[in-house]
Length: 389
Image: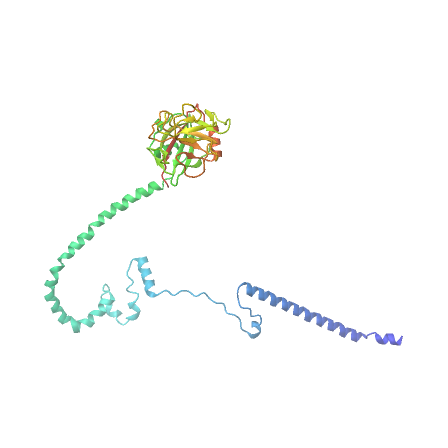
């Protein structure tokens, strides 16, 4: 029993042990917080690209913030800026600070610039008396040749009125170019095409507005009781025309698209039928479009198996790239063709690039167009050159 009691610690020793634990725990806590502070300070400084000085507060030195350096502007630049802004010469700003003693003398002659006043007293006692006699003898000699000066002034004054009207003429041209083009207004298309509404036939119209780089936009119009309006069934769509541009007088093989106003139809295609109210013909084996100017069947659909075939040049319509999967004939140079005016102009689903004269559309656009066109409405097409804006 005596040995077990001796092993047990006295209350004083237990109290000391408890205090040591508290002190140790406090020290560890402080060290942990200090380590956390160092870590966060280091991360914050490195994030902003600044130098890490964690013990600067111990030595009473802190990093002073660096102020942005403002650029210095030379005095002559400031004076030129002030002169341009106010329209007055900045002469009085410089000599006031350098010649304060002469201000009282200059006040009597405020209109004279300070430079001329300083020069006069220096030149009068020394050189002005003899120099006054010399220019008197030289004046008649110098004045006679200086008679050419008014001639130069007259020449400089002559171009001034010519500049006035040139600027006035340029004003209306800029206003015309900025005028917006009303795509939904058929009158805007007719105005650019040089056409009138009285010349239109039928109640369906396809307006093809051609721009640069062989790109064009097609607009579709219906004639109703209220006049011509854009067709709700077919939205405006982009396309491509001939690589040779537009031509009012097309020639065979020039890759131009004929500008003008022409009937549309019939419709053609590779499939047995099409969802359209137009006359439709499915291409058969041997179907060609005759492009031989010497043939009696020039600019018409024929078949190579026909015994009466007399052509040596033709366009195969059953192509592998399905350019004529759907097509609508633009009745150019029809029905009595002139061999000198070109042939085979279609609305087709060819590649989206410059063509050999036809107008190429996307297949989906052409399919929608076939659904809209009807023989009863006598559809026509107007092809013209638009103005870039």
